[in-house]
Amino acid sequence: MSAHESMEHAEHAEHASGENKKIALLIAVIALFLALSETLGKGAQTESISKNVEASNLWAFFQAKTVRRTVVQTAAEQGKLNLPALPDEATKASLQKQIDDWQKNAARYRSEPETGEGSEQLAERAKHAEHERDEATAKYHHYELASAAFQIGIVLASATIITGMIILAWASGGLALIGIAMTILGLFQPHLLHLH
Image (cartoon, rainbow, N blue to C red; front, top):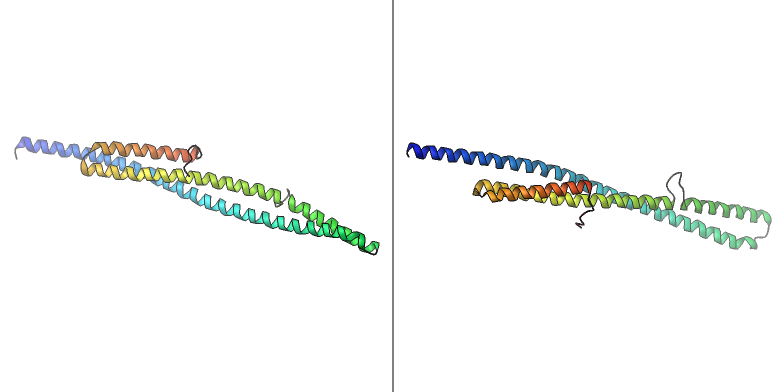
């Protein structure tokens, strides 16, 4: 090997080393965004599950309150029907007091703003939890797509080192931009694209 060939070989190796460093930096940056989207995705998934459980619990409580209200309303209506047939005023007064108590309980089961545990308040809270669940689920889908774009980008960037095909590095960068866009949409506009 002549000195000229040795010099060309060294220059080529130095150029290839410089390109590989750039590709390695691209891979590192994409991996950073991948870690971020994965972390955001796990958080959104956990929140979605948590809000789903909360909504289910609130709807179950709502149903229990509705059943209780129906039972006491039925008892009050039955008491009203039986009231005229009672023989003495003391018994009628006692039953009327019980009917009044049942009606108060039925009204309390329907609406109890001070505790937030009336069926009306429970329905509102359950709907709010469902909305938050849907929001978290939409975010999760965006983060999952972003993660896929970042992972494919890393693979393409790695393939650039092996093949020397710079077009793969450009494709990798494009996928990284798509992943960043999906992450931003997940953070700020999760319902802009309907992904599920």
